[in-house]
Amino acid sequence: MIPGLKIDRKTEKNILNAFSKWATHFNKRFKKFGMEGLIKEYTKLIETHETQSCYHGSKGTLNTGESFQYCCGVSYEYINDLSCRDALQIIIDLLPPDESIRLNALISTLDNRLQRLQVNEEFFLNENEIKKYPKEKFWWFYGLPISVKP
Image: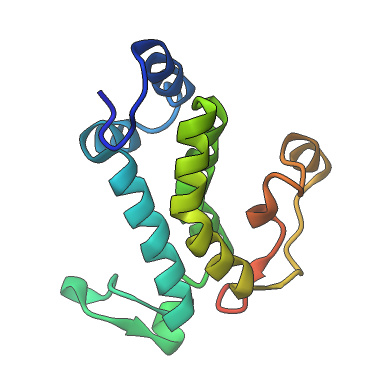
């Protein structure tokens, strides 16, 4: 059972299969923490870029300024962290309509916050990625927060 979802076994199996090629650490966390864990990761990502700070310093200390920039302010780190939003979309697409609506409602405020952060449009997807991730559906791939350098 995936924590936080009200779904039948077939839907659960489809969701778990969708992540079968994702990293083992992702699958372990997802099975343990479910939707709450994914939404928490998404919230943390947004808060990190709203405050332009992270707790990845020595012994978990706060990184700001230049130390933040070289940690979470790098595009490949941001894109990696953004995979939590990709995961949410995969789940939304596989859910029955009532659960999909419920999950979209849960993350809509977070989506709005991230959209307000995405002002740096210097980051572009390559042609294959644009075909795979159309902007109408995968808008989070089409811009970087000002705190992230391409």
